[in-house]
Structures are given as structure tokens and as C-alpha cells.
Image 1 (spheres, rainbow, N blue to C red):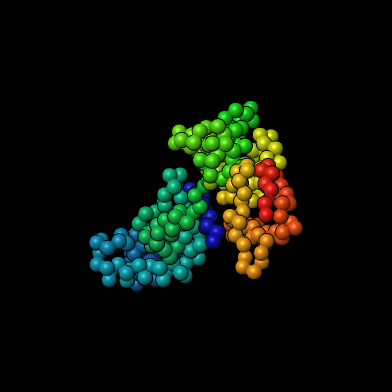
Image 2 (cartoon, rainbow, N blue to C red):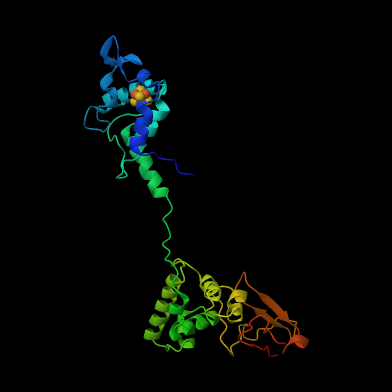
Length: 277
Ligand code: SF4
């Protein structure tokens, strides 16, 4: 749902006061009796200004007063302009009239609307400017990117990047991955494939190096010399037929005996996997 446009308080007040019908507003003092409203002589001119929270007056009294004032607003020729002012924002981001009824809305209603609007507003995603590519061509960053092209899991990336298989290597790999996202101008929520794509775009990796990641999708890693296939499971009654599968939503293949041994390098070009019967 689109958010309402809120004018600046100064501009909205000017538009209201300078409206040609402002002088005929319902809450203006009646020319014959300035104690009551021009729009309804049974309503006091104070009806729009009294506190609209519990405690300032009896609840029943307040509700009756508000209802009478709002009835007058509904017939007011500048109701739209008045509500625009009542909903406008000061330079500090606050409502300009924290107590009055304006444009048929109590201050409490206008405040709640503003709070709802701000809570519904999307949180901006912080993205940094990409840094010059020379800063990204460090030995460790490039090694992490190459590791990330082969593996989804940070611990395996750490090993592939030569950072070691301990906690320190894992931390360094995670830190470098997060840092690369920032330095490539990506949000922190960027996926592995988005990071690899950005690295290819900046000339840090060859497209062929990330082909495996893009083909297999997120979460699939295929270490060199290790088959992504289920361990030799065979379907009953179909001897010699191997079921090859990867996680749901990705790829699944069957290989007949005659196909066994065929290269699957088209699937995982960087790992040169071979099926074995
Ligand atoms: S909309 Fe209501 S508060 Fe606003 S000028 Fe008209 S009567 Fe007064």
C-alpha cells in the first residue's frame, strides 16, 4: 500500500490559511455569537481544542465533544486542506498540532496513523559504494572468491582458500565474504551467487570459475574429486541403473549403464567429476 504524501507543516498551513473558503470554515466563531462555532451554533468554539485524551475531562464528555466537532468538520469547505495540515510534518518530523481536532481527525488518530505509517515503511538496505577493483585483488580475497565458487559452506571455502580448517580460518573466510559484499557494493543480505556474479562483473573471477555454483544453485558444493551423487543407491528391479540427484528444486539425473562413466563436466565444469558404475 502506498504511503500518503505528507506536506511540510509550513506549506500546508499556508495552503489552508490562503484557501478562499477558509473564512467559511466550520469551526470559525459565529459572527452573532463568537462563543459558538459558525458551522453549528450548539457547538462551542473550544470543542476542537480541548484535550482529547482520558483524564482532561470525563470520557463521555470528551467523546460527545469530539463527535460534535467532527460533525462540523465533515461539512467544512476546507476539510481536505485542514486535514493535510493536521497530517503534515514539522522539520523535526513531528505533527504540528499535537492536541487539536483538525480535518475531522483527533490528534490521537493522526498520531496513530503516523506511527503505523512509519512502522510499515520498508527499512532501507544499507549499501556501500563499491571500492576500486585494485583493492579487491589481494591474494586472500581472490582465494576466498575462488573457494566460494566451488563451495557454499564457509568452512570448506576456508580450506580451499588456504586459510586452514580451524576456527581461525573459518572466521577469516566469513569476514572476507562479508567484507567482499561491502566492497563490491552489495547489501549484507546478498547471496553467494550474487556475490560471485559481482566478482565476475568486476573481473575478479572468470565466468567459468563460477559456472558450477550457478548451475548447481545455492547450498550445493561439489569438491574436486568428490561425487555429488547419492552413494550408489539402486532402484529395485533396475539393476545397473544409478539414481543421481541433488537437493530439491535443483537438478536430478538418471544414468543408464551405458551412460555410466560419461563425463558430467557440463554440470560441474570446474570439478571434472566422472560417474562410475
Ligand atoms: S475541518 Fe474542522 S477543524 Fe478544520 S477548519 Fe474545518 S471545521 Fe475547523
